[in-house]
Image (cartoon, rainbow, N blue to C red):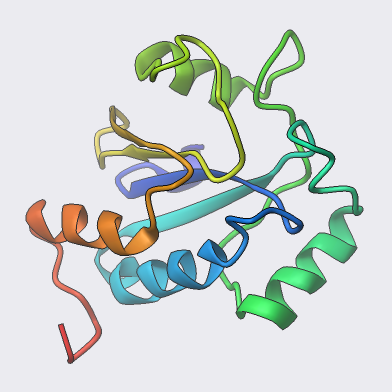
Length: 148
Protein backbone atom coordinates (compact mmCIF):
# COMPACT_ATOMS: atom_id res chain seq x y z
CA UNK A 1 0.00 0.00 0.00
CA UNK A 2 3.05 2.26 0.19
CA UNK A 3 2.48 2.98 -3.53
CA UNK A 4 -0.79 4.71 -2.64
CA UNK A 5 0.49 6.81 0.27
CA UNK A 6 -1.05 10.30 0.13
CA UNK A 7 -3.90 9.15 -2.12
CA UNK A 8 -7.55 8.57 -1.35
CA UNK A 9 -8.16 4.87 -1.95
CA UNK A 10 -11.35 2.93 -2.64
CA UNK A 11 -10.78 -0.79 -1.99
CA UNK A 12 -13.37 -3.14 -3.54
CA UNK A 13 -13.75 -6.91 -3.44
CA UNK A 14 -14.94 -7.83 -6.92
CA UNK A 15 -16.37 -10.76 -8.89
CA UNK A 16 -17.06 -11.08 -12.61
CA UNK A 17 -20.11 -13.36 -12.39
CA UNK A 18 -22.08 -11.42 -9.77
CA UNK A 19 -25.28 -9.42 -10.06
CA UNK A 20 -23.26 -6.39 -8.94
CA UNK A 21 -20.60 -6.87 -11.66
CA UNK A 22 -21.98 -3.97 -13.75
CA UNK A 23 -20.64 -1.73 -10.96
CA UNK A 24 -17.25 -2.11 -12.66
CA UNK A 25 -18.38 0.56 -15.14
CA UNK A 26 -19.29 2.98 -12.37
CA UNK A 27 -16.08 2.28 -10.47
CA UNK A 28 -14.08 2.97 -13.64
CA UNK A 29 -15.97 6.25 -14.14
CA UNK A 30 -15.23 7.25 -10.55
CA UNK A 31 -11.56 6.46 -11.11
CA UNK A 32 -11.42 8.43 -14.37
CA UNK A 33 -13.26 11.41 -12.87
CA UNK A 34 -11.05 11.78 -9.79
CA UNK A 35 -7.72 10.05 -10.38
CA UNK A 36 -5.98 13.30 -11.31
CA UNK A 37 -6.84 14.58 -7.83
CA UNK A 38 -5.52 11.51 -6.07
CA UNK A 39 -8.35 8.97 -5.97
CA UNK A 40 -7.41 5.41 -6.81
CA UNK A 41 -9.74 2.41 -7.03
CA UNK A 42 -8.21 -0.96 -6.15
CA UNK A 43 -10.03 -4.12 -7.23
CA UNK A 44 -9.47 -7.40 -5.41
CA UNK A 45 -11.24 -10.35 -7.07
CA UNK A 46 -12.70 -12.82 -4.60
CA UNK A 47 -14.34 -16.22 -5.11
CA UNK A 48 -15.74 -16.64 -1.59
CA UNK A 49 -19.31 -15.74 -2.48
CA UNK A 50 -21.24 -18.19 -4.64
CA UNK A 51 -18.19 -19.16 -6.76
CA UNK A 52 -18.71 -15.94 -8.72
CA UNK A 53 -15.04 -15.39 -9.54
CA UNK A 54 -13.84 -18.79 -10.81
CA UNK A 55 -11.27 -17.55 -13.36
CA UNK A 56 -7.54 -17.09 -13.12
CA UNK A 57 -5.81 -13.70 -12.97
CA UNK A 58 -5.46 -13.38 -16.75
CA UNK A 59 -9.08 -14.22 -17.53
CA UNK A 60 -10.34 -11.88 -14.80
CA UNK A 61 -8.23 -8.98 -16.11
CA UNK A 62 -9.33 -9.64 -19.70
CA UNK A 63 -13.01 -9.76 -18.81
CA UNK A 64 -12.77 -6.54 -16.76
CA UNK A 65 -11.07 -4.69 -19.61
CA UNK A 66 -13.18 -6.04 -22.47
CA UNK A 67 -16.58 -5.85 -20.77
CA UNK A 68 -16.17 -2.76 -18.59
CA UNK A 69 -13.08 -0.86 -19.78
CA UNK A 70 -11.42 -1.21 -16.36
CA UNK A 71 -8.07 0.57 -16.14
CA UNK A 72 -7.82 0.91 -12.35
CA UNK A 73 -5.45 -1.53 -10.60
CA UNK A 74 -6.73 -5.10 -10.25
CA UNK A 75 -4.92 -7.53 -7.99
CA UNK A 76 -4.69 -11.31 -7.76
CA UNK A 77 -7.67 -13.18 -6.36
CA UNK A 78 -7.88 -13.00 -2.55
CA UNK A 79 -10.02 -14.15 0.36
CA UNK A 80 -11.75 -11.39 2.28
CA UNK A 81 -13.15 -13.48 5.15
CA UNK A 82 -11.79 -16.26 7.33
CA UNK A 83 -8.31 -17.13 8.55
CA UNK A 84 -6.80 -16.65 5.07
CA UNK A 85 -8.28 -13.17 4.55
CA UNK A 86 -5.92 -10.79 2.79
CA UNK A 87 -4.31 -8.42 5.36
CA UNK A 88 -5.88 -5.31 3.79
CA UNK A 89 -9.37 -6.74 4.31
CA UNK A 90 -8.59 -7.98 7.84
CA UNK A 91 -7.43 -4.45 8.70
CA UNK A 92 -10.35 -2.69 6.97
CA UNK A 93 -12.93 -4.94 8.65
CA UNK A 94 -11.35 -4.24 12.05
CA UNK A 95 -11.58 -0.48 11.47
CA UNK A 96 -15.01 -0.44 9.77
CA UNK A 97 -16.82 -3.61 10.92
CA UNK A 98 -20.21 -3.12 9.19
CA UNK A 99 -23.49 -4.86 9.97
CA UNK A 100 -21.99 -8.36 10.16
CA UNK A 101 -19.23 -7.31 12.52
CA UNK A 102 -15.91 -8.56 11.25
CA UNK A 103 -17.22 -10.10 8.02
CA UNK A 104 -17.89 -8.98 4.48
CA UNK A 105 -21.28 -10.20 3.35
CA UNK A 106 -20.87 -10.19 -0.44
CA UNK A 107 -18.99 -9.04 -3.51
CA UNK A 108 -18.54 -5.33 -4.20
CA UNK A 109 -18.21 -4.20 -0.59
CA UNK A 110 -16.24 -0.96 -0.78
CA UNK A 111 -13.95 0.77 1.73
CA UNK A 112 -12.82 4.39 1.41
CA UNK A 113 -9.43 5.25 2.91
CA UNK A 114 -8.49 8.93 3.19
CA UNK A 115 -5.21 10.42 2.03
CA UNK A 116 -3.78 9.99 5.54
CA UNK A 117 -4.36 6.22 5.39
CA UNK A 118 -7.38 6.24 7.69
CA UNK A 119 -10.40 4.09 6.74
CA UNK A 120 -13.32 6.53 6.77
CA UNK A 121 -16.34 4.89 5.13
CA UNK A 122 -17.66 1.44 4.28
CA UNK A 123 -20.19 0.97 1.50
CA UNK A 124 -22.28 -2.19 1.13
CA UNK A 125 -22.53 -4.14 -2.12
CA UNK A 126 -25.79 -2.49 -3.16
CA UNK A 127 -24.30 1.02 -2.89
CA UNK A 128 -23.60 2.05 -6.45
CA UNK A 129 -20.46 3.98 -7.39
CA UNK A 130 -22.67 6.98 -8.27
CA UNK A 131 -23.51 7.33 -4.57
CA UNK A 132 -19.80 7.21 -3.72
CA UNK A 133 -19.25 9.92 -6.35
CA UNK A 134 -21.52 12.24 -4.36
CA UNK A 135 -19.63 11.40 -1.16
CA UNK A 136 -16.25 12.10 -2.80
CA UNK A 137 -17.53 15.45 -4.13
CA UNK A 138 -18.62 16.42 -0.61
CA UNK A 139 -15.01 15.80 0.50
CA UNK A 140 -13.83 18.48 -1.94
CA UNK A 141 -12.88 16.49 -5.02
CA UNK A 142 -13.76 18.08 -8.34
CA UNK A 143 -14.69 15.75 -11.20
CA UNK A 144 -12.84 15.70 -14.52
CA UNK A 145 -16.26 15.16 -16.11
CA UNK A 146 -17.37 18.57 -17.49
CA UNK A 147 -21.02 17.56 -17.07
CA UNK A 148 -20.72 17.43 -13.27
